[in-house]
Length: 143
Image (cartoon, rainbow, N blue to C red; front, side):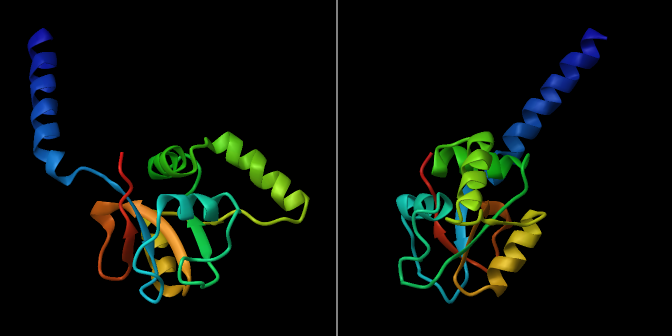
């Protein structure tokens, strides 16, 4: 049994090294008709209802992945600097007081890419390994 566990650990370590080149990295994406770049603070302001415009002045449509998605958790931690529970409470208060609505939720990374590519003024986030020519990378946040 110990030999099998050791073999599994070695195989897992080798796999981690092999896959290391395709490491997931959070990127902020937008529609091709939008701005070329955005700052982390501008993204934070959009996702915390402090701004309704992109840097080029377009009205923004923000999208988010579903709760429990690891890329959403990373986005919340690195960009909004808030956890999902805090954000849920925040958006409940915003809706209740008529001050705004949360970013529109999409079901998957593929849905995120599809809706951002087809919605002028949109912004979202993805794992960098999933980005293709259908969307524009606006920001690669520093860890």
